[in-house]
Image 1 (cartoon, helix red, strand yellow):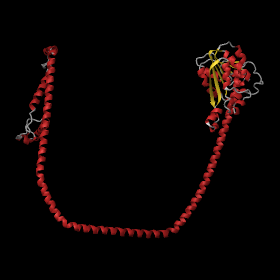
Image 2 (cartoon, rainbow, N blue to C red):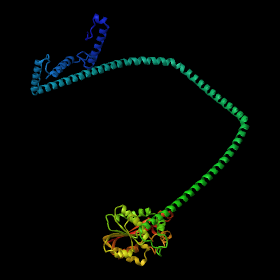
Image 3 (cartoon, rainbow, N blue to C red):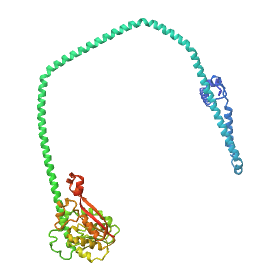
Length: 500
């Protein structure tokens, strides 16, 4: 096989397989020379260092390095196995001695490999420099031939200008004629098209005038008739929809009102049934203090129990961690039920037997007693919190100071007294809420309530205004803000005093 590119033999010329193999070997040699340039003269006579001997030496050395520490094979047998085990034992024993030599050999091979790569890069760089020099030489040759080419080109251009000069005037004249001819033809065609269009339009207008007029009149008549019919149907539909809407709205409102009344009556009946079941003796007949159904009155005008409980949640912070709590005038037991849900024990006191029976039917602790008599029967400093909601306005004005003194005497040091009552600073309560209850005597202003607490020895008095009037009477929004705050602020207030 010829690997140096010499002329092939007669057998190679006759055998196609040998020729194909020889061609493949030449391609491989060309690729190797391109990657590892040899010591031949490259392009433009630049000599390159021969690297193939160094490459062969590196491959042989790598083979030797790879064979270090291996055991030469022998024919199989017991003797061979013993000899092989002894050789491996000796190799492991001498491993500490030859380890440095092996590492040195590998480092040497890495150095040889790096040197080979550097020489390859050096050869490639020389090839690139040689190619650049050749390109520069070709460019210099072209620049040397450029003046002669320019001179020949100038001569040819001068000859062409001499031949073209007589034709320029003729070409300008023909261009002017062609321009005027095109302009005249374009204008004539435009005028002809305009005249033809106007003529045809006028003929069409005269021909379709009457039919168009009659068609428009018929269409207008139909549009007017359709519009009137559509307006009539729309008005009829709107009237029908409005009547149906108002009818259904009235039916919904009536149904809601009747359902509210029915639920209120059923609630009162259930409360009375619970009260009758809880009271062992027959309930007393209505007296002068309650000449009407008090529970029904409270349900309608004070609000459902859920509404009242929601408003009473503002006081929970004062009951947290307390165990001796009394609700004076507990009524239906909204505060007692709320405290029971929070796991806070409390006792309710009320003079109405039916209210106390309702509280007991709910599993609440309640007693029927006169508030003054019950307070006088209690030991001094026996209670941590006394709560009294919507009660003091029912007391005669001259008995209120006595009631406050009794409450203060029954509180321990640091105990809390809480009153909630209608706020007379808000003029709206006199027109709506206060005089609905015939058992109200007179409202108690916050300053008067605070004065009575101070007289009873309470301090750190705090007044909180509740239930803004604008929430239940939106028409107050039309008043100026400062005037509304001064005379139509909050419907109720709570006053909180602490025993010092």
